[in-house]
Image 1 (cartoon, rainbow, N blue to C red):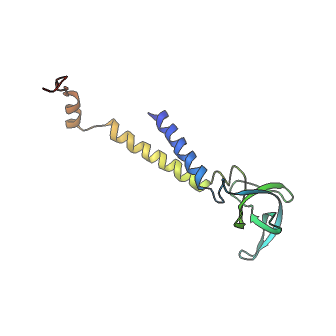
Image 2: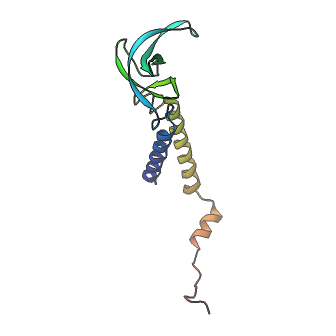
Image 3: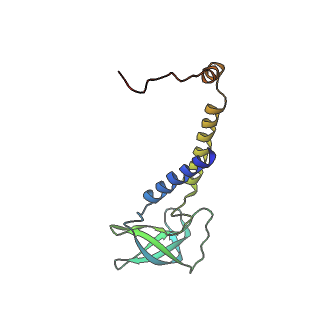
Length: 145
């Protein structure tokens, strides 16, 4: 049971990942970018950003992500939608395809649902166990008269 539930989880999570990425993987354009330090006016600090060119204009995308380090001058690829090139993401496995929040949430959900399934199927009450043990299939005729 554990193996089949795990395979079902991987299929569902894989389909979820494939069709929920923003910018969209299927409609998005990829462009080369370089990591540079850019001043963030909101946070009033310097942050690493991927600077890229799209449609003749220069844009930058935040390159910070949990458990991923980037170095100034590093060459990366960004993915963006052609309608909104200012909303891009650094195209990496950890950060674009797999996010720590959704991975954590899905694993916790998987474990909880698996525990619920085990608790429902492993310890039936006495009446249910008696009904299952005394079950005898009724005899049916092969053809109706």
